[in-house]
Length: 357
Ligand SMILES: [Mg+2]
Image 1 (cartoon, rainbow, N blue to C red):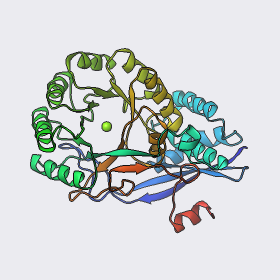
Image 2: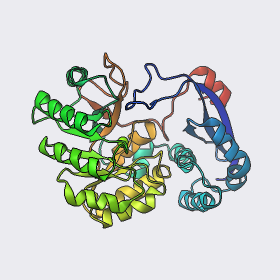
Image 3: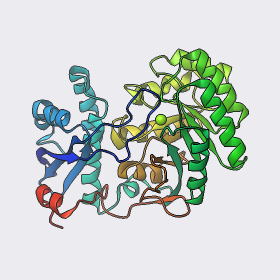
């Protein structure tokens, strides 16, 4: 099988309503944007799709670099193409998500060619996984506790906080949430790189006292040494390696320093499904968990295929809380049984993309 064409179909992505509230002073989501579908057609009768929120950027890179790299190549030679794109990244400095968009489209082709969902092609480990409720930033402790009650009522059995980025306020919130939900609900905290080492230690101690399951990305991940020092000072388990450039490489360093008690994986920031599985297997060799970052269909396949992962991340960005469509009343996300990634398109988009089945 050979790739015959590589195209970008630009689409308008409406603004998130309500908007993703981030910590003080920072917007969490933008307005309407131009997204894109990457469309890789083959002479084997199957077409692969990958989605990108930054459509203009993807289009530029396809025009200048990716089309001539991919057309004529074997779409099933994913390891070869993954390494070629990593080599091109050294020349072009791709935005970190670009390689993942291509890799997901190639896995879509492979799954469709095999007549299997991608998780089955990877080797399915499970057919359902619990989702945790991953909050945006809400207004105050009482609102967070109200949101937590709604999440538990909707079936979630674990909650992760994105909070204000003020360590004392966030420590008070973390303790209040633990007291409110009791000891049996796993709780996590995501710092989204809001702190320096001193503040990260302060909050880490509070999270340890409150029995949090993990403490995620409290600092920018450019200094593995800073994480090593944090890991030496706090008892709460650290979940690291979410956004570091070249995460499929430097995850090994996070592990080697002893800083990581779990690592991040997931298609968007690690070169797609290929890079994510590489990280998952690396972590498994050290008896570490590889937790999948963010939702989406490609990440659902990863959640079903990675043995050493425990949750699906479901973003909760509204109050009243709305349960995401992919999460059932028991807080579970189920395996996709459609071939490939299993993308679903409305009729208008399907016509534009040339999808007839
Ligand atoms: Mg995170």
